[in-house]
Image (cartoon, rainbow, N blue to C red; front, side, top):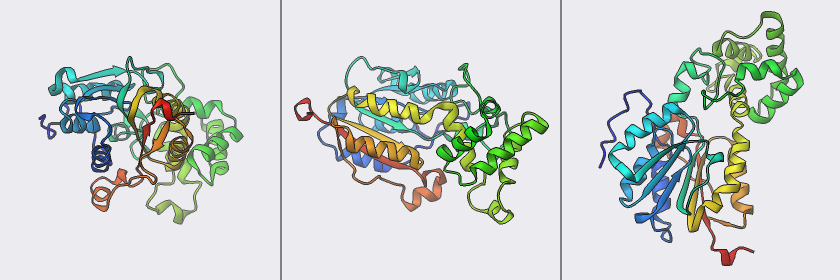
Length: 308
C-alpha cells in the first residue's frame, strides 16, 4: 500500500472531501464488481479520491482525467506505486470518451486547494495574483481580466448574479466598469477584491464569508464554462457506465448541486442511490473547512431492459 503521508515535491496536496461517505456508499452498492472494475476519475486533481479507491479495491483500474498540468504531475507521482493500474490523461472530462464501459465514474467539482492557494493561478482574493482563473492556463482561452473588459456593464451584472448569486451584482458591475474606464485594468486579484468589498456596507465586510467570494466564483465559472461542462458530463457519463455502474458527483454550490439532482431524478438511464446528498460530518468540517459546502450524490446505471 502506498504511503499516503508522502507529499508531491511540487506542493500540490489534495485532501479529498467526503472520502468516508464515498467509500461507505460504494461498499453498500453490492451490485458493482469493484474488485476487478474500471474507474474514471473525471477530475483527478492530486489523486486523493483515486488513491483511496485503489487501496480499497486492489483489482480496480483507474483512468484519471485532468486538464491542469500541475495536477497531472502531482497525481502521476502519487499514483506511481500503483503501476499499470493507473493511467493519467490530459483532457477536460467533457471531451473524453472511454474505449469501454466502466464500473464507476467519479467527479469532484471543487477547485482544489493548490489551485486556490497559488497566487499565480489568479483564483484567490486572499492572495494577490493575475486575474487569470483558467483551469487550464495553457489553453488559448479568455482570462477573467479579458472577460470583465469585454462585457458591458449589464451583461457583467447578470453574470455575477447568475453564477455568483450575488445580490449586489449591479453595484459591483458598475464599480468594476467605472474602475476600468478610469484607471485601466486591475493590477491583480487583490485590487479586484478590494473594489468588490467596497460595494458592501462596512459592517458586511467583516463577515465569515469574504465579500468578493460570490463575484470570484461567478468569474471562475464563466471563464471555465463550468456549468456547461457539467451539463455535458451529466449527459455523457451514464453512457460510459456498465449496467449497475455508479456515477458519483461531489458539488460545492447550489448551481452545481441543482443540476446534479435534476439529472439524477430525470435521466431515465439512472436511478438514485442517495435521495438526499451526503455531507461532511462535524469532524471533517473542522479539519477541512472547504468540505462544509460539499454535497455527494450517487446514481446507478439501469440495465437497458429497464430504460423506456
